[in-house]
Length: 285
Image 1 (cartoon, rainbow, N blue to C red):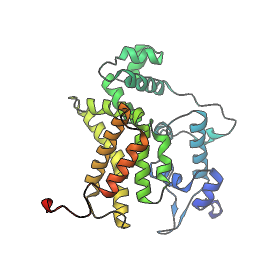
Image 2: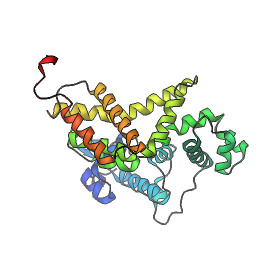
Image 3: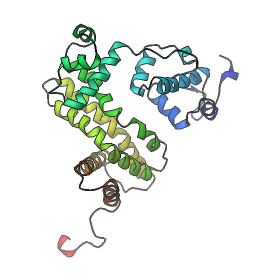
Image 4: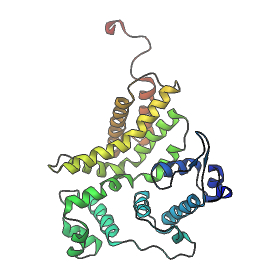
């Protein structure tokens, strides 16, 4: 490859119409190959990166595919030339049809009340086709568990990731949880419920999903501490506490007891100021 083919991330962003933060995120998630490093702070991208970004945008726009499935497609060696504007839409394979049908049924009926017959009927396939890809109901649930949760709020997370101020990012994250709660609560509760199943894979999948939720939150809290915006605290424990607070507030909103703004203001006030008066009462000293 010639040096003239190389470009900085700003140029790649302009040519692709994808923000630099999203490009970095795609690289981190394995959707893009790493850039060419010429030093600690110098990195170059190539035509391969530009073509891959065009491919991702095409799959999102034309096929309405989530990033999870796009990553799978890329991992399987999907050729970049399919991104041509006049290319025919990609055919979604049978396994993806089955997974999408299973997600709809799991969300509607829950794990326990869902049968393989329900899934194959929703997918409009024969039972034999189901068993080509999955051994049983447990296996398909494990395969689609992450998407069952993450597909529900993928569209709101980019704004959170683009916020550079850690305190503002934490607030935006809390708000995103609140406004999407009705969509993801059932999926999360379903995953929590089956995590106690004797099948250890369920527990492992639940822990994996929780790690993916909490890891960025822990990083943001740690960064806010380093920036002096938050006093020194245990980032991991604090992330778990924050998750619990927002989760239950979302439940209160779902019950109709408070609206989103009331709950968000309460969460914000509690996290920033706590419940202790500035002057500690004598009886508590």
